[in-house]
Length: 173
Image 1 (cartoon, one colour):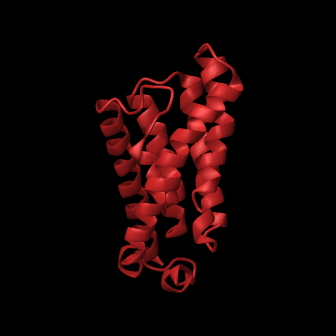
Image 2: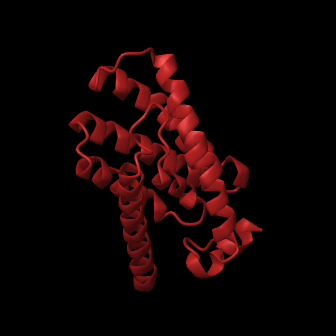
């Protein structure tokens, strides 16, 4: 039991740290500053497919990233909650490999346009924001995330030991 808790906390912490680093990298490269934002960190949103530790890891990583990058307080709250909702949805769909990027894409298409329009008061329609956010999320979660999932899947049994009595090896086959 103790070993599972240590593994869970360690995985969550590593995922949170990776999320922050990848967010800062995308910002430094200018990929997160335009209408269509490609955030490398969003590729990590497929990780609940492998481990439930990714749920708090992604939430904390997003929360810290939004604080560090100077987002508005309401963006910190609602952006992080969108990531949490996406992570929970991905975990719920983990038996359906090809659907794993859908929950974070949908969560962000719903939440982020509202934040852009009402928190930041950017010029543009909600539909425009939904389309541009959707394109960025499809690139980040759908394409990069699925590439990551397929790469990690080869060593999933080593990287993500079993939790809750469910063998990850059985899930990913």
